[in-house]
Image (cartoon, rainbow, N blue to C red):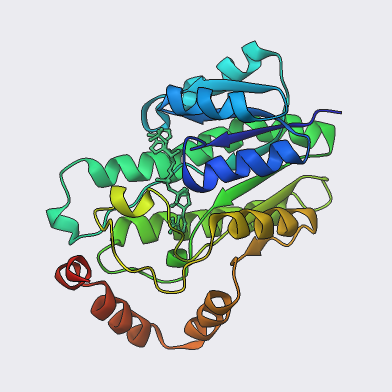
Length: 255
Ligand SMILES: NC(=O)c1ccc[n+]([C@@H]2O[C@H](COP(=O)([O-])OP(=O)(O)OC[C@H]3O[C@@H](n4cnc5c(N)ncnc54)[C@H](OP(=O)(O)O)[C@@H]3O)[C@@H](O)[C@H]2O)c1
């Protein structure tokens, strides 16, 4: 029985923590991200067999499955974690950056899922964990493309899960609230106060427990989970107004 987890975006933040916790559970790993030095350093610290595959998933995701096959491993858990956001008015974000976001946050997930699912279905075991976000639950002013990309992952994961019912293969969508990682710096809001933030260890612990019980989706954390539930009962006009007010770029950068 294969016991290999492949984690995209394992060079920092949530992906790095998935690598640590999955290795502690005894999984061999395939780690993917662009920064090879970071992946090599992490691999050297982990207790199980780790393959490092540097890859720009925004450009080369389609070539990755063949590189994994060449390693001679069967991936039985795919963690589609690599992703980034941009916080600004859509038309002010440098041209091409939002399209790159769609290629990484959505297209690479589809490409990798399509490549690795058939073997999981044949084996009747394994699964996919997709990193969505609480921003996937509603349109997000000033993160318009990011929010839409995370809504895509929620929809994709839920539909896939139904198609896979009875196959032995699981799909989990993880929807964290704010987590202090390199994400904020990359999104152009480094240093902001993260209200309701959750430690990265807790995000991954809760995600893996949700995967174990085949929960379908999880909002890690306590308070943020209840806030999200309440928010989803509110009219969209109200949640949009709230998000617009709290997310206004000039205001966030001053906080
Ligand atoms: N932090 C939060 O508040 C938060 C909340 C909800 C959801 N999430 C989601 O959680 C996931 C992980 O985010 P994080 O917070 O851990 O952010 P992070 O620390 O910035 O990590 C992002 C990871 O994605 C990788 N990555 C970025 N572009 C890539 C590319 N083109 N090809 C391959 N890998 C690439 C990065 O590695 P390289 O730079 O080495 O390529 C890095 O390992 C993302 O999908 C994010 O949307 C985060």
